[in-house]
Image (cartoon, rainbow, N blue to C red):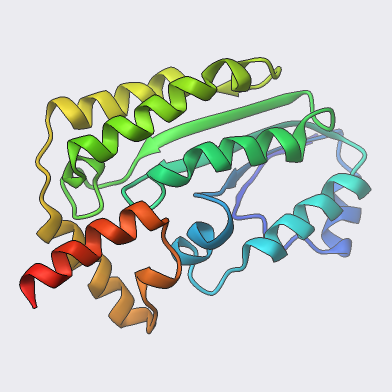
Length: 203
């Protein structure tokens, strides 16, 4: 029997690892939407350092991991973090697991505030160029990266750009209010700058 489940990866204890090693193989899907402070912002009350150490411990003590899927939900919150995310995947799992698949999906529903179509075109183009710059580097690993899909989603956001910073800002600040946090403490400097510029205009 092969064990397959979908998890955020933060609650894999020694007892769970021991049980999972009893199966023929592990082929799991982990939902991870960024690294470092971006991850901490999206996964409120979770900690990236804890996640990383948990996964390292799981890899070290597992004997039957055959495949791993990483699911990344793309949004305005983590678009500028994706190169760091892909580099982390390569460093974290290279030479440890043969079958690594990184799947990119769009945030749902379409048109919500943190949809990437609400980001400025120049911001999207800058990230697009950065991803293209690193594309060959990512593809040297024997992983399945959906780089072309990622670039296609960004190109779609450029072509169909709305640049509704008001909608973006509103969703983010409402989220901050419910969580008693501030985007300024977590998100990447270029995105924080966009949001702060809008904040100054409305205040």
